Length: 225
Image 1 (tube, rainbow, N blue to C red):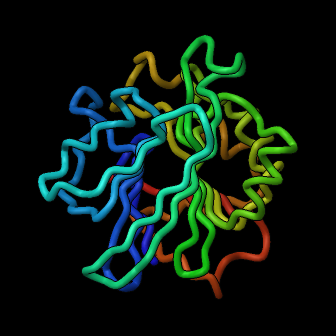
Image 2: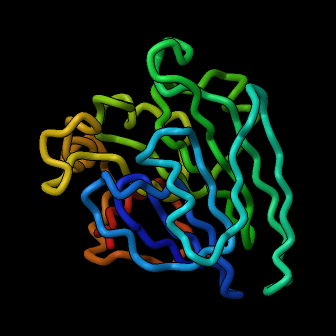
C-alpha cells in the first residue's frame, strides 16, 4: 500500500489494487496546493474548513463522515477493484473540555490489506481506557502534533505511548506556508525531538506492507505534496 502526504492533516492512502482514500482535505484558504488526485472515498473527521473540503475532487468520490454523536460504522464496496472497506468512526473531541471549546472530532479507523489504520483528525485529548479498548491494536496512525488548535507536541508523544503503533505519521504542525496563523504553534521538530525512532523519508510518499511493518514504533516524516 502507498501513503502519500498531501499537506496539513490530509493523506492519500492507496491499495495495491489501485483504489484510494483521502482523509481530511483542506479548503483553498489553507496555503498548500492540493494535488489533483481522484480518490474513491473521502473521510472527514470534523466540520472545520481545513479538514472537510471534500468538494475539491472533481471525480465525485464517496463521502464518509459521522453525522451524529455516537460511534458509526460505514461499509463500502468498491466495484472498480472489488474491495470492501469498513470504516469505524470513534467519537472524540477537538479539545480537552469535551468539545465545549472546539466541538466534536472523529477518529476514523479501518483495516486494509491486513493493516489497521487510524486517523486522529484534530483530537485534543488523550484516550480513555474505554476508547483504547474499543480501538484495539493499531498499526499505522496519523496524529496532530502542532498545538494551538489541537495537541501540543508533548501530549502527542503521550498519545503515541498510549497506542504503541508500528508507524506514526505526524501532521497538523507549523510550516513556513502556514506561518504565524491560528492553526498551529509548533513545528514538526518540537514533536520528533521527543521521539526515539524517527525517519525523515525525504519524500511525499512511502510504501506500507503488513509483513514489513517495523517491530518498534517508528515516526515517519513525509514531505507534503
